[in-house]
Length: 423
Ligand SMILES: *Cc1c(COP(=O)(O)O)cnc(C)c1O
Image: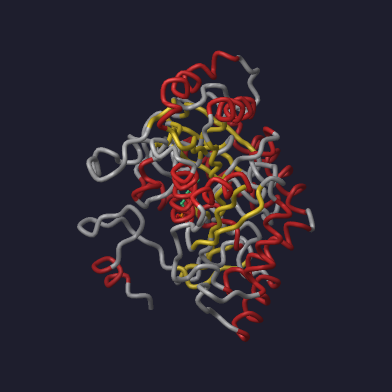
């Protein structure tokens, strides 16, 4: 038996209190799209373990890649050594990401990949003799991770800037793009960003954003046209563009990378989450030759970062196999089908008095409520219906593994309709 009492008294869970912890559910195994609880109940996973498990759990090819690599070598330091899993994963990543990206820095989590992106941008301008360009513009409603640098570019309200004020660099925030995904474009939507760039370009190293889909900061889908124009503005004002594709990357929005909706390429791109198909923690920061040339302008070109577990071979091997699965292309049809089914399955909630908005893009379905949920209560009701859905604040959302069947996705959407509809 899993010692839940010990868990409650000694373990922190994400964003949780040790004084009054919410219930946690003991999981003993996971297969396909199902999580198996200790009491034998099975839950259909609506979360893909926070965007990660795109191929489902216990995928035979990912399992095999991991076993084969662990028989050879689980880890070696990356300082002064290199190995095939890292080299071949980098090659695969550069093949599937926008062409101007040519360099890869592997890190052990998404937040750290964002820290590396910020450092790349800072070093780029410093080495080029523009050390005043050391602030960042980011977008309200954004989420970029939990380390201090990454937090500084998160939404200042949901990112708890007040709690950590004085210890974090103060950045510049543009309003969330008001133009929704699919709405006709109007140039006036760009005015706030343009004004900030005109005023601050001399002190700004980069614009940091999640392309098209803002994830944990509010699950907001905005117009790719805004992103396209933001890219142009960055070029006009000599500001780098950092695209955080940690949540959106690897097919979730219907394109392999969300930047593709706008046909743009960033100067620096972060990937993580689904990179290993949800097996191990790994992320990467990619950049262009132009960024590297800047960093090298001081004659050294040394990027000041180097995690202990950089390019862990187990994680790289399984990520490479996950990219090989994606390269077979089935994800595209799966996500298209999920998009149609999520739209239809959640449509009964349009106009419900508790519901402010329902939106779907790719394999992401969002129900925005007027009032925050009671997490412990709603979680229990979802578990009773045999599904795993974990809302936050006013958002109840689904982003299941791409391999989910029509029947299982129907069970998920009807559980959401039922649980939300009763409020
Ligand atoms: C999850 C997430 C991060 C942070 O990644 P971790 O692996 O949790 O550190 C950063 N940016 C975005 C967009 C994310 O969704």
